[in-house]
Image (cartoon, rainbow, N blue to C red; front, top):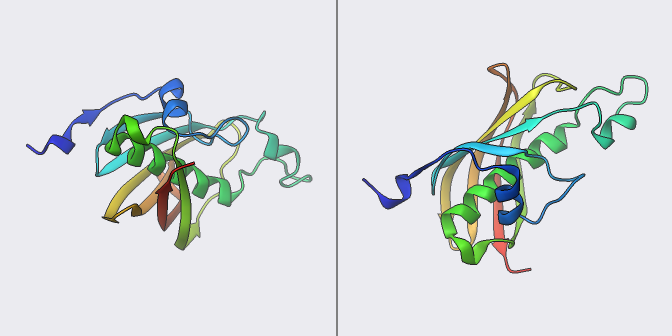
Amino acid sequence: MDDHAEQVIDIDINDVMRRIPHRYPFLMIDKIIDMVLDQRATGIKCVSIGEPYFQGHFPTLPVIMPGVLIIEAMAQTAAVLVVSTLGPDAEGKLVYFMSVDKARFRKPVGPGDTLHVQVIKSRQRGNVWRFSGAARVNDGIVADAVFSAMIMDN
């Protein structure tokens, strides 16, 4: 068995914040429930009416999570996977978007929904990683995308 195939379960919010620098109100994942290092991860976002973006998106129907924030949840889940794979020396480093392709938004996400964000690594070259991501609510896909990110020193 490959050393990277180690199963990691239930990375809580404190461990997420140790791995990536994002903080409220821009931290878009609450925990990681499943991870295979160097391969895939699943993050969870419990969507609440208290989220600050609901006040202005859309004022007449303030209950739709912006699609770009769902994509950001994918990126943050991927960043936790990258940092976890690279080890403690990578903790706190920044992971920047390089590209987002084939993004599709299929259903609205609102208060009370639990977003399951799965990312799968498709390749890595140096400090550039490429992923496919899908966000689900109740086993239905609400958004998906292919994206690239680069890990850099602060």
